[in-house]
Length: 504
Ligand code: HEM
Image (cartoon, rainbow, N blue to C red; front, top):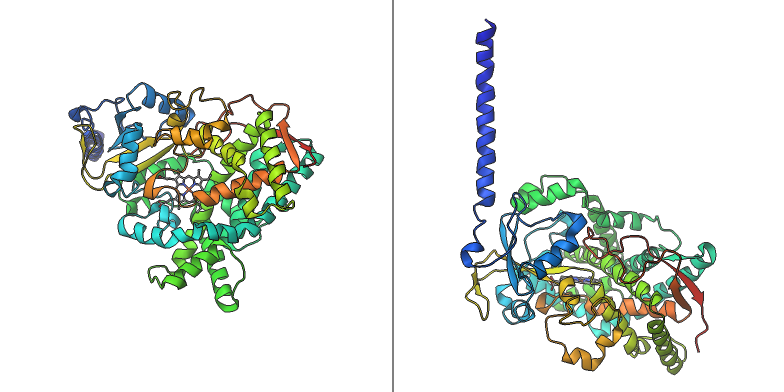
C-alpha cells in the first residue's frame, strides 16, 4: 500500500522537476545564446557571466570594473559587453564618440528602453524617436540665456539662504557637512524653479516635499536590483507588474504641479520660474502634444535629473576649494573685483563675468563627473568609421566619462585639481570628445546652462562672505567616491570649516 502511495507521489514530483529543469535550461539557453555576438565579429572583451553578462556589476567595485574595461580590455578604443543578453559596445575612442553622438546621431537617437519607475516613462530623458524630438524642441527655449536671466532673482534668494545657513551651522556645530548644505540649496531651488513652491529645507529639512523627494534618491535595495533585472530582461509591461516604490512620490509631485497649474490658470502668475516657462511655451506654440500632465511630468524630471547631479557637483566643488587654498583665493579675488564693478550686487551679468569660477566648476566636473558613463541605443545599422565593424539596431553603446576625464593622455596628472585646464586656449587645444560631464550632441543634457548657472551662483554666494577650510577628518585629495552610487557621491560625509571673511 505505502509503496504504491510513494509511486503516486513520485510522478508529480518528477514532472515538476522536469518542467522546472526544462524551463531553467531554456532560460539559460535564451540568455546565453548571444554570447558569441562579439567574438564572431572579432571584438574583444571580458567573458560574460550568466545571468547578467556584464550588467549590474558588484557595486563595491564599480570603479575598478570600469578601469579594467577601459585599460585592460581595449575599451580605450572599443570592446564588447553584454547587458544581460543585450550586446553593448563600450566605446572610449573620442573620435568614435563624436561620430556616434553628433555626426551620425540619426543612428543613435535613443537610450536603452529601461525606465526605473512608471512615473518616469513620459519624461524627456526616457522618450525615444519622434516623441523625444518634438518635446526636446519644445522644451529647449526654457533654458535659453534670457530665461535664465529671468530665473536669476528666484535662485539668488535661495543662494543667500545657503550662505546664511553655512555660517549659522558653523557657529552652532563648529563644522558643516557639504552634501547636507548644498543638498538643501538644490532642493529649495528645484522647488522654487520647477514647482513654484517654497520648500524651505534650510528651516525644515523634513517638509513633505523633501520627504517625498528623498524617495527618488534612496540607494538601490536588493528588491530594486531584482526589479531592474526583470525590467532589463522582459518587456516593460511584465516588469511593471512588480510594485514600484517611487510611484507614491511620483503621484505626490504630479498633484503638486497640477494644483499649481490650475491655480495659475485661474489667478495668473508673476513668477518667472521653469514651470511658468513651460506653460508659456505650451500656450505660445499651440503645441497640442503638450498636455498639462506632460508638463507636470517634466517638472518632476527637474527634480529627478537635477537634484543629485547638482548637489554632487556642489559638494565636490566645495571640497576641492577647501583643499586648494590658492584656487579658493583666486576665486574670491575675482568675486571681489567683479562685485565691486557691480556695486556689490550679485546680478546675472556679474555672475557671467566670473570666468575663473567657471573654470573651477568645469574642473570639478572633470575630476568628479556626476555620471560615470553615457549611453545610446543603435536604431539604424551602423558601421563604425575606420573599421569593418557593423552593429545592428538594438545594440547598446556605452561611453565612459570618468575614465576619459582621468586619462593622463588627455589630462596630465589627472588627479590634480587644476582649473587652468579650462583657460580658453586650453579648451581650444583639447581634442573633442574627451570632456563629457553633460554628455554630447543633440541628446546631451537639456539643462547644462541652468546647472552651471545655479552652481556658480551658490558657490559665489558662499565664498563672497566665507572661506572653506578642511575640518578634522576631511580626507586628502582626491575625494574618495562611493563606488556603488549611481551619481558621484563622497564615500563618507564630507565636513569642512567655514571662516568669515570681509570682501574688498
Ligand atoms: C550638474 C548638473 C547636471 C549634470 C552633470 C547633468 C548631466 C547629464 C548627462 C550626462 C546627461 C546625459 C547626456 C547624454 O546622454 O549625452 C543628462 C541628460 C539630461 N539632463 Fe542633465 N545634468 C545635470 C543637471 C540637470 C538638471 C538640473 C536638469 C533639469 C531639468 C537636467 C535635465 C536633463 C535632461 C532632461 C536630460 C535628457 C536630455 C534628453 O534626453 O534629451 N539635468 N544630464
